[in-house]
Length: 244
Image (cartoon, rainbow, N blue to C red; front, side):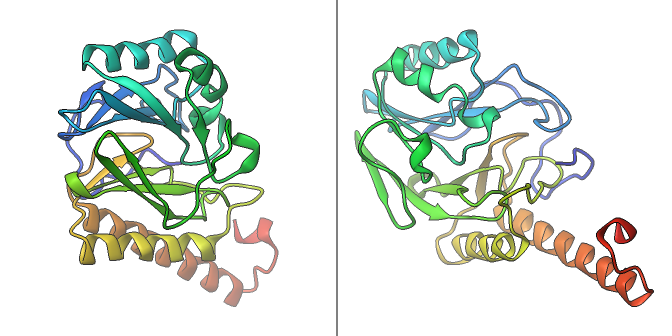
């Protein structure tokens, strides 16, 4: 991941915990780094008038952070009913098992190895909890198990590492695939055009209020990189090491 580029709709300043939309609250994990930017955004999502909430990406195995997520729910008058994972990287999913113990919730994910309980996640699933509706969008590319969650009521999408709030993401070894990633970006672009999504709630970095602009930026970035590779190959650089 790179922290260099400013994205459309990106606010100035640092990321902090707190409400991002009417239904989504960020609890920022204390794991800032070059790869995680300000840290992992753990999302607490629920209808304003409901006592139930869903947590997306509990984050690293950090007891203080996991308890901070629970405290944020309690402060909002909510009980955590379910945990969802955007993908299996440790900065998003490592704390899921312990979080499930603390909250007595099930964990749903695309990868069966990450699930706690009988139910997984798949494209087209609709998660309904306490009046909240989250639609599962398959977005492989960063990893093979990457998912996004469309929150129609807030015209928002929770993107994990598929789109970041600052800079660009990586197509991660060993299972990330660029072709899949480009298809996933186009799928997210369709959400902005056809479903009116305008807010990106990312796994790292600040909230973006121009979802379509962010997707177009990511697509243009990848097209530019591919053009650079094509030029290098045409110039006789044929091994990955030489191209890089």
